[in-house]
Image 1 (tube, rainbow, N blue to C red):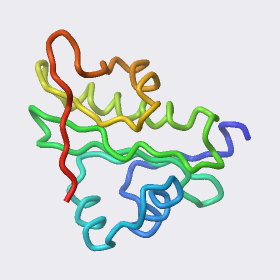
Image 2 (image 1 turned 180 degrees about the horizontal axis):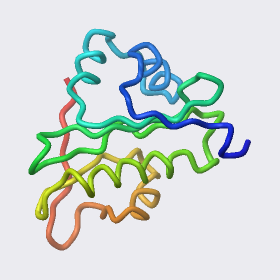
Image 3 (image 1 turned 90 degrees about the vertical axis):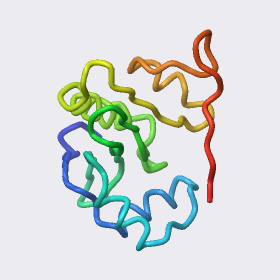
Amino acid sequence: MSSKDYTTRFDSPLVKEFCALRSQVGWGDTNLEMAQKSLNNSLFHVGVMHCNQLVAMGRIVGDGAMYFYVQDVVVHPEYQGQGLGSIVMEHLEKYLSQAAYKGSTVALLSAKGKEVFYERFGYTQRPSDHFGNGMSKFL
């Protein structure tokens, strides 16, 4: 497929297509009410569409000043390896370059094995000489 077969949008995805895409990559079922609230509270969205289907997406969450978090960068399994994840990240990075202050922190949690992908956009793995392991808690 050529890039002309895709369209990029910057509005929030529909909650059902958001949940479906997350499920298609093995992230499990997501409560619709929680997902809708999460989408509503996002700072920025980017979606890649093919034949009116959401096939890739990403979003930025955070406080809009000091802290930004790259979230839900996901590509439908049938569309992986075609550069769509890079397209999503390029749009997220453009938003961050305009919205974040000098000194802001941008973070993400990479899926295992995808760290090198994010390194291409300037992210560093933890732990490092200055930072310990990142931590998370799932409820």
